[in-house]
Amino acid sequence: MNQVVFTFITQNRDYILEEWMNLMKENADERLINVISNEMFVQTSAEYIDLIISNTRRNNEEFTYKLSEFAEKAVRLGWPLSFLIEGIHKFTLCVINGMVLKGQVTKDNQMEIIYDLDKWTSPMKQEIISTYTQTWEGTVSLQKIALQELSAPLIPVMEGITIMPLIGTIDTERAKQIMENLLTGAVKQRSEVVLIDITGVPVVDTMVAHHIIQAAEAVRLVGAKCMICGIRPEIAQTIVSLGINLNEIVTKNSLKKGIDAALELTNRKIAKVEE
Amino acid sequence: MEFQSCVKIINEWDIVAARQLGRNVAKELGFGTVDQARITTAISELARNIYLYAGRGSVCIEKEYEHGKSGMKIIASDEGPGIQDIRKVMEDGYTTSGGLGAGLPGVKRLMDEFDIDSFPSKGTTITTIKWLR
Image (cartoon, rainbow over the protein chains, first blue to last red):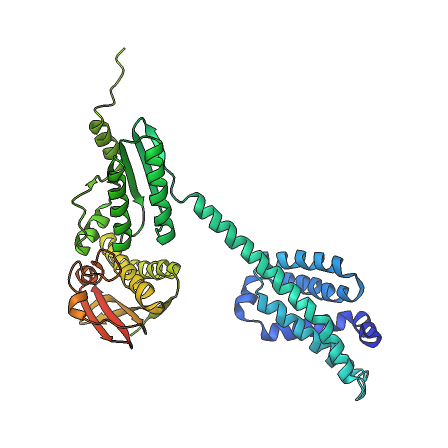
């Protein structure tokens, strides 16, 4: 790090911070200004500038740790990535402007100073971007796992009767999983009747219907009976309008009716115990 | 035209986004639950067709006002391979992807107005309206 630049930055921290905040406020989009209060903005800005400055002194590892801590905070506050990157750019601008004002930049050393600042800020930008994307990627992959966990459970409720409650949107990947779980589970649990409950499926279009029909057909092939429960009135109407043929499959409007029918199919019924 | 918003269809989850947008607008316009289900299902079919056959495209939603009645217009457009035989795709049970073949004729039955514009290797635009009763 160039000694001239270094001393300038450390000596003029407050000036740089002031200038920087003005510049950033001019350019920041409304979204950001609305999200955070003024105090928060000043406080976090100071922290950010201090962090950038600290990069001149501390060793690299400590800086990386501090930076990732800050990036996490920024993500929580909802500061966009573009804002932080713009921040570094504006910081460089402030430093150069300040140095020009103080007459520290001459024709001979101007290239050197700019080059030096760039060499110093580039890794910082990289670090911020990678910390940010890592945080995002982490969130996305966690959500994906969470989604998979609630994908398609097969629940045995009574001997020979199994239920698969479906909740949420069914896409191709999930449809595959449903089919797999349904078949292996039905065989493993020696199900006689399998109930697929679609109360929680928001939209039944031709693709979803197609997958459900295929699943029911496959269940029939492994020797069990399949019933579709939880067909809401509006879903029934759209199925009719679409012209989807569900004649081959037994359908019920609620899971309760489905269980009743399943018990009947297996020659059982629920009775009250008499004292 | 007072209001328009579009959803780009690039991956499978964009279908859900288009559907969500459609449901919100339908609710805002005052459609009942049955019509909401019809509209979202129609959007789902159209968006899925874009995803399956064209790869990418967009679904736009407009509020329509005409002769004192209001409604919702869905425009699904892509620059995909186009439809070879429009008469055939409007037949029930015709499919090139192994599906049920109920998509487009189904959408026509779900909605009130249906218009299809397609040129081979140029793309397809489907415009459909549901009126509020």
